[in-house]
Amino acid sequence: MTGITPQLFGLDDVIQLHGEKISAENAHILVFESGSLDSGLIPFKIARVFLVCSESSIERGKHMHKQCSQVMFCIQGKATVRYSDGRDWRVLELDPNTAGAFVPPTIWAEQIYEKGSKLLVFCDRHYEAGDYIRDFDQFKAFRNVELESP
Image (cartoon, rainbow, N blue to C red; front, side, top):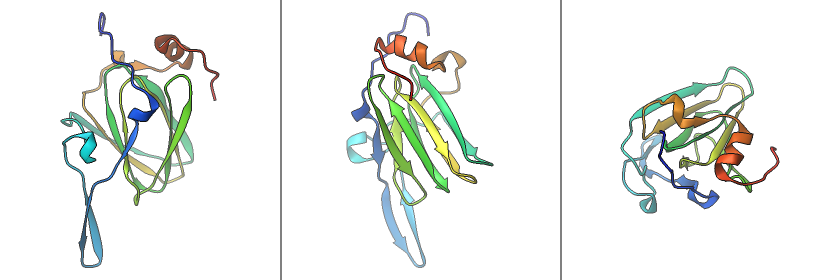
């Protein structure tokens, strides 16, 4: 990671992804494929997938990735994604009937889970401990902005 200057993304770069809805008898299928953001598809080749299962109402995340992009889908319950560019905060509500959330690198993200919720996350990179900034003050310094923590 040393010597790499990542592109700084903004709040408008965090978007909802809407898959293709295919209706079938007594059900529907929501399809997401790799492609481009402007077509509402996952904008990267998937390198890692993980599932977060909350046993209680919890807050997780609370970090920024320097290079890793993520797409998050709530597959059970409800999860709130709060995100910041270092100046402002925005919120996306996710549940199994809503779109996924694309979060690019350099955006601080937090997830608030209802008890029993499950969040499925797709990443464009394998786990790299050095890709994370987990301290909000270090994040502000990285982004070179002043912002009070929520």
